[in-house]
Length: 112
Ligand code: 5GP
Ligand code: ZN
Image (cartoon, rainbow, N blue to C red; front, side):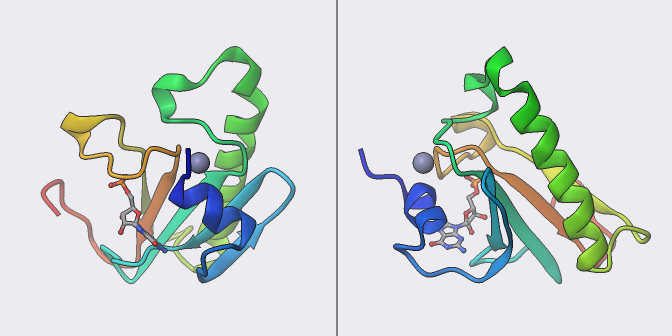
């Protein structure tokens, strides 16, 4: 089954890269919800946070470490930012490949 974010991580679909390593790829959201809006994804296809297993503990920890580093490089580590992962239909998950949204650069409200 083809997956948009697997294809982006492989470089088969263009994206604006922010960070990459052997486990993680991070790129700018195509429809940013703030001055900074980066998507952090594992290279491994995982459907959502609900599909994580204990075998992914180190990967998830690494994704958060990447988020901290990206927050620094994007200049929002001190001003603050939101890390969001949508799970399933009621949350509005539209791409079924685990991703952290890192959003910042403005004061965020719950309803944006
Ligand atoms: P979700 O709604 O699943 O939590 O988040 C999916 C995110 O992926 C959305 O914020 C959407 O703007 C972004 N997105 C969807 N398609 C593309 C794409 O082709 N390229 C990039 N860079 N972002 C995308
Ligand atoms: Zn995928």
